[in-house]
Length: 435
Image (cartoon, rainbow, N blue to C red; front, top):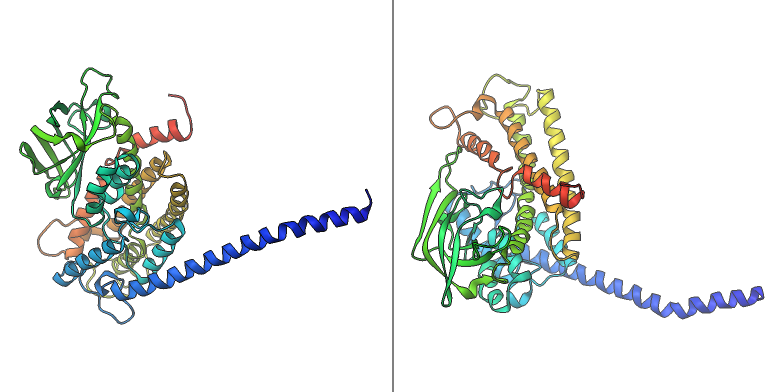
């Protein structure tokens, strides 16, 4: 073959590919233009609809206290506006009331939300745990019945998983459900049920075949917590709060149509929901975003400044942190927080591509909860004796709130599966180590 033939073949090959290349390039340009147009639309919508009290204050602005009546009303308004737009669940299908956004559009939305200094409202057990499971494993009637209420926060949910004799060994649960006509009759109890005293409904694991091996014979069902036979008793924690409850069931009736998936096949659904739960809990690894990081630095400077480390905070000091060890711990923690936040964002994009979280959720849950406990310890160190108050004079409200927050953080490595359980999952499912 002559060299001119080779040259001509090379020329014709490129010539034939040119229209395809041009078309591909044009498509990318159109996509970029569409995203930029969407960005401008979101930016305008946020400026028009996000109340000032729900944003970080701008220079010269005095922030409205979070617990003030106006801030509470603004929070309700912000939730309503976002829900009507589908932004409480941006990527959920529009046919159920979600935003129907693509991964790229949701990323733009979250970037613009962060730029405004706010966050999307409505994070709950419904939006981050039950909703994704219903979209994945529920039938069409169940989706249309429950998903819109979850998006608009019209129903709040509690999780009926752990029992007095079935915590880390969740498959050992004994709460029973027997089919009677078109209903299931439920008897038993659940414990450490977060927010049950304020919830409307429960998604619950029940044993529908007591003779089957413990991982079999379990079903996943939904029912109203206002049903006759439900008794809810709050459990006071070391922090003084009572967000955890024990819930008793005595002949509670749940409609059979609210059984998710197949009867006796609930263990697979339970594990799937736990992956979503652990992904949600790992979100605390962000440490409250810019607000959280700014708070930690501000507290450290105020209470451990060069001006006077011996006295409690009585006003602005010079702002220079004198404790070198604390300065090092604070810096390392902020670096770890940034790294975790970036990693979870990257993995989050991969998760969306593969339609749901995997066993790596246990990695992030373990690290995020341990990191949050470390952050609370650092704040306690910075506050010194002012972090040891429970009530009475000599302590400010935010100091007393920190004491309770620090004590509450001890439960982070227990809820959603203990750190030890997470390490077992990582060893078996991620690293592939033998039992």
